[in-house]
Length: 621
Image 1 (cartoon, rainbow, N blue to C red):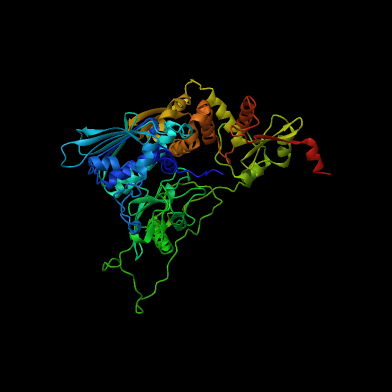
Image 2 (cartoon, rainbow, N blue to C red):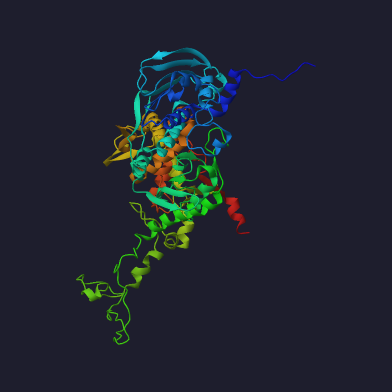
């Protein structure tokens, strides 16, 4: 029998390795920018086209490479960081395996220009599919300039699984964020399709966080700091009010300036919030840990984001206590400094002092059942009472409303008290509202009841209004009042990963009544919204629609208007507990059954239910 085990060619082995290291354009950005950090760069420029599929370019002012090093860096397991096996337990740089460049060049065309400080000329190398096409001296600035073109050009099966440009740009910007947050002293910029998306000057940690996550977090971050024998912890955590849904939350953990994912530490932060978070939401945090490199192992995953700690059980309570302390200060208020003398005085009891019992001032002539004749204010010691009250007792007026039938109201009342609604209808009136067609009865501030030929019809008032608003939005009406201009434009500061997606959504949003202007960078100004849209919920709604769209933008593009309209309708529909007059209930009933699909909401939930006459009769047998 012939031998069947063969040694893989280098280019095939490199493509297999590339599948572990390079999963998408974001992986290339991570590896190249981390190499620039290791090279001591103080300025890094990242330029991408088409979400990184066409071009990824990283320019730095680091130490550069010689001609020999420039060629050697593309070989597998070629590294300047590791000399012996024991060095793996004292890693203080970002890259060390020597796999990244070999993996990238195996599945893309790579051009590199690099020059060391002090050298007159640099080196130009062009490689494609692990093969060297050109290597020659060139004139170039100090540092390194790498261009990665046509990612996965020779692995079409991998390339076709890449997502849309906006999705890939979202992943790419996330990797950019991670390196930028870990290195606030490095100037960094990101350009996509010729547009400068983010420009981060050298700064401190707080300013770098605001530059990446948005200035809206400036009032929502609480500093944390703790130190123990196993780790030093510092950073910022968000207030409970800044909590977000898991898919959009900013949660970053770093160890020795390296981004990591650690489920145990994330749970420690979450447990510190205890019952402070809204249901279904998670906190925002930017936490930096400094530990002895010998106590961690980062060589357990190709992307080096999963790290094994020797003392993670000891770090867990320290981290949780640090977050709890920050939240305690936020909830209780400014801490009292007990080190300052005479900060405040605590009164003491002297046995020789006369004890004076407290006195209560009251109006002995006050009668709560008398009508007020005079509105003149009482003296200061009687500010809560009226001194002159008179008038006859009118018990008939007090209980008259329970005996008379409810009259239609021209305007919606305030949020209904469900018991009062029932008390205002006598037994005969309730029966008439249910049995006779054309009359409506509101039950529990949630359902509208009316009689139909087959029995009793029950309408969910919120869902009914949601369907009405949805179809009205889809008409894309140009009538006056379809849009309402805001007195003060609302500013939206988005993350970089959401900016490109939001920019693509603007045409659909404008069809529905929004007016949006781009302010530059990651900021937008909303000057008009659809009529009756709750302005105060604009930012929360924007975040929710971005999450709804997310990676499925291309798949949803044809139905984008419908998706946004459905989200808007849910936001704009009247809520439960809203008391409706007879006229309002009749109008809602008429408009609901004028809709194309009155039985279901845009999300497919039922709106109308009918309790048959036979079912009602069975209740009395």
